[in-house]
Amino acid sequence: MGNERVKSSRRKFLKSAATASVAIVGYTWLKSSQFLIHAAEPEDKNLPWYGIVIDIEKCIGCGMCAKACKNENDVPAEPFFFRTWVEQYTVKNDGSVEIISPNGGIDGFKQTVPDEDIFKSYFVPKMCNHCAKSPCDQVCPVGATYTSPEGVVLIDEKYCIGCRYCVQACPYGCRFIHPEKKVANKCTLCYHRIKKGLAPACMENCPTGSRMYGNLRDSNSEIVKFLKEHTTQVLRPNLNTGSKLYYNALSSEVR
Amino acid sequence: MKFYIPPQLTRLALAFAIFITLFIVLRNLLVPDTFGQYGHYRGDSLIDNQQPEIHYSGQEACLDCHQEIEDMKQTDVHNTIRCEVCHGPGEKHVSSGDAADISKPDSREFCGVCHEKNAARRQSTIVQIRLSEHNTGKKCIECHNPHQPWEMKE
Image 1 (cartoon, rainbow over the protein chains, first blue to last red):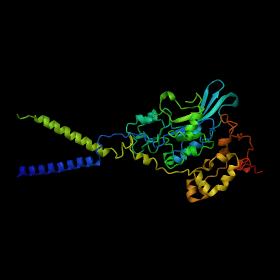
Image 2 (image 1 turned 135 degrees about the vertical axis):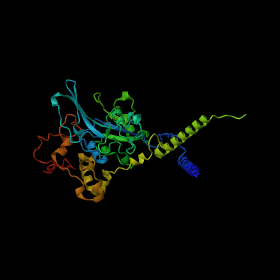
Image 3 (image 1 turned 90 degrees about the vertical axis):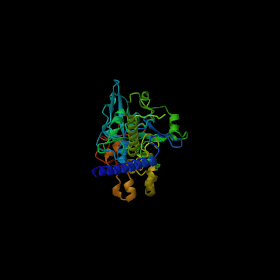
Image 4 (image 1 turned 45 degrees about the vertical axis):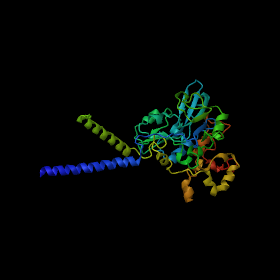
């Protein structure tokens, strides 16, 4: 009697377990046959491949770009969190270089070195370089940061685990950990705007037009024309990051 | 001749089969659907990144109502400066039409952000003054119309 009951319940269990496993395997099989993931070829030649130009000669250091970026992208207002910011480099007569960036340049610059000591001085706006071979993208352990088919380096906020590898990997210091979301945050080249045909907020709000973005694949675009006509340089070319942010009139002091 | 399979091998094979099946099932359940669609990332994240709200509506939206100010601006040196550079994000004002939803900065400091004398600014590109010397105590807009800075008011 007891034996019989054990046998019948075991049979029942085996039956239901078999049904369940067949159902689960069937479900996953139907869901996709891609149980090994093949990453698709990311480059679609029909899509634009975005690059950026910053003309240092035109920049007047008003910080409107940094302010507009904070407004547009709800970047935390307290200092040290910037997707774009402006630095002032002052080369003194004795050869030393002073670099300042009070609140990213948002409140304007007060000249810190007296006129007679200055050999030359200029502003350098900084932002994500949207590298083609981005170091930040390569170190992400979970695939939460990536280069979009348009060449924009983006973050998947839902997938990021906040491990900070990318923050220390970026040689340009363009990433930070969002103090509330606790995930990495950076310039998206205003992906939500450029996809709707609007210029990124920093470029929309540059009074002198020193910033420009455009399609590097289109040989007739403004940006390609600019690159042809000017001597431009990227930051830290020795690191071979494939930076797509080109500076016009970049001095060697800029780090 | 009967092929002999030892029972421990059968059990091992069964264990392997269960492990592999379990791995495939778990992997399929845990990896998001669109992962790998375009590259080593979640394809839907491209859509997520297009979701944030737009705060700066762009010059064209301003011109729908304020063409006369743009015409005035075109006659003077501030012609290349877009409205929202000074007036701030305008999307709220565009949708509500309420004057309270747009900023009209009038402080000396605000003008000084661009026009304060600084060695890094080129004299040929932008007119610069020292806020501490130039008509102190007066607001810039008492003499200069920001849309037409060289049409002096007095």
